Image (cartoon, rainbow, N blue to C red; front, side, top):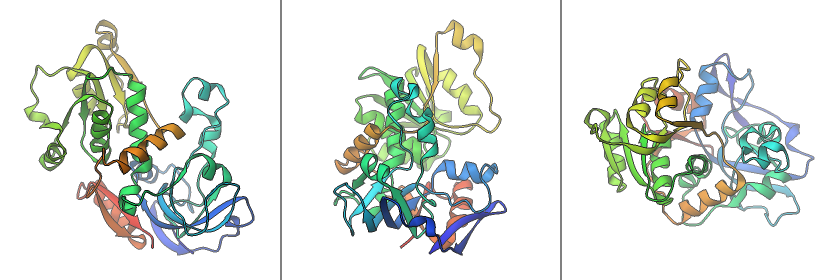
Length: 326
């Protein structure tokens, strides 16, 4: 099978015979396509994974072989996530499922940028679903990233009709804004790029260029989906006193928030990382109901062009890449 693996800080496509795909309870799936996640780019850019690693986890796939006690069968087209919480540890009991040690250890094998992937029985039981017929493969690949946004919305714990500001309208920002709207928030988005602002407006959500933001705007919750260091200052500027800042991005210099602002203004700053199985379920329901519209958000690349997809994403030439495997 062909895989796109890391070799000396770039991705190259190679042929690999992998016996680890066989002999275990679960399913072997043919990957139809896989979204390129920002975390994939961060791992590659900052040398966080070793040579031979196959990235990618936002997969849509067809089952080609299965040994499972679930109802899935050969030829089913499915979506799945890659991590699974144990549901029993203190992290899970406290609602911090993405900190669960089992969650961090589980994954699909070898990775989504591969012609074939092994899914364990645990994946099939907890985080895999039949792809809804009214979604294209490309649309269905947003199943996991949208669930990450749903997780963030829930962690913020805002009341219905609260004002939520999304800073940064890349693909995650567009998803986050729509998720907030689906959960009954008054949503505003902002970005430095006019085309992204217009995209959110076209989806029926108020949006501004950052330079055009009214000074009087104050948000009960600010969702920081931009990876710019300047996004921290923007979040502090537009957060309501007593409000919340939800961090859903890393910044290049790992800068912190001003302690005195948090103290005197009683701000809450919290992070959100990966979704629970329930978040994933709700994500697929929103996509299938077209309450979140992802049509046209991604650009299709063949497997051999994963590195080009990464380069184009970093250069802001595209919003998001979808790697078509088959």
